[in-house]
Structure formats: C-alpha cells, structure tokens
Image (cartoon, rainbow, N blue to C red; front, side, top):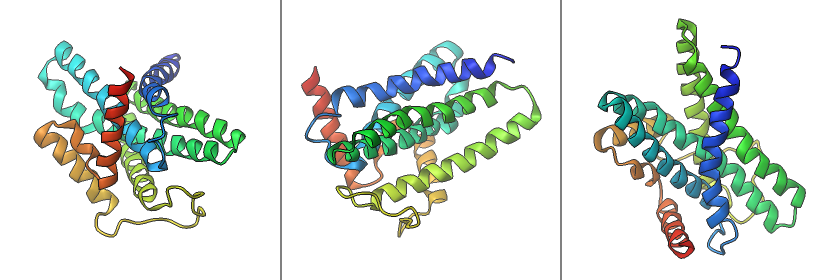
Length: 220
C-alpha cells in the first residue's frame, strides 16, 4: 500500500494527459475556440471518447459484469474531471487573449494538476480494501459531483469574452438543480449507454461539439 498512492497518481497523470493533449493540439490555436465555455465542451468530448475506449477494453477483458458499475461511476468521473480541466483551460485561453502570460501558464498547469489530483485520489481510495475507504469514496464522489456540476452551471452563465465575474457571484440554473442534473445524466447513460448524451446540456454544447469535430477532420 505504500506505493499505491504513487501508482494512482501516475495512472491519473497518464490518463489526464491523454485527454488534455487533443484539445491543446487540435483546438487551442484555432479561431473557432473563442468562448471559454468551448474549453469545457472540448475537454468533455475528449474525455468521453477516452472513457468509451477504456470501457470497451474493460468489458473485453472482464466481461459485461463491469459495464454497469463503470457506467454509473467511471464515465461520470471522467466527465467531471474534464469539467475541471476545461474550466482552467478556458481561463488560460482568456488570459492568453488578454496578454496575461503568467496567468495563462498558471491556468494551463492547473488544468492538468487539479484533474490529476482528483483522479489520483479517486483511484487510490478505490484501491484500499477497508470499509471506511468505501464510505470515504462515496462521500468524495457526492461532494465532487455536486461541486463540479456547480462549476459547470456557473461556467454556462459567466460572460464568455469578458474577465470572470467576482468569486462572490455565483450563477445558478433557473430550471435544473445540480443534484437533478447529475441524476438525469446518469439515467441517460444507464438507459442508452450513449455516452454522447452527456454533452447535450445546452445549445452551446452542440455548437462547440460540431466545431471540434470540424477541427479534428481538418487536422487529419
């Protein structure tokens, strides 16, 4: 167990870099990347593609018995790790556009560091064979999902081409609460196993998703 935390962080680092690289490589300098919220969509799109491939490999190795647990926890986990990544990448893009090189580099580092730490704790806690670890894991999942969903809703209402609103101002969704939003997404995954349903959160998601597909097609 002494090296379990190192292994968890190493695995998290590799996986998060695999999700981070396509956005930096194909979308970062493209003129279509002109909204901070686009970064969230691009990162989520990349993460769900990674999660789909990972789940196929797990099912091929361990059978269908792992499909539902991974749909309920792993896919939403990748989704919300990507939300954190996208929020920091969006701030980095805004800082670059405003000529703030120091802030850009800081947010770029945090767009890797924060998801890696969250992902690393997720994997490390799952590796522990103790009843208290299970309780800690589900408490972490609940708090993590609620916090990430709150950041997602806030990112949707912040001005997209202006500096971020003061930290004391919090955007709220007028129709869907964070808790209900999480259960809606999980229900969609369980019912249809269509991972792209996670992206249908708003018209902005659809617009940005199409732009990212165009970017990938142009790149290849």
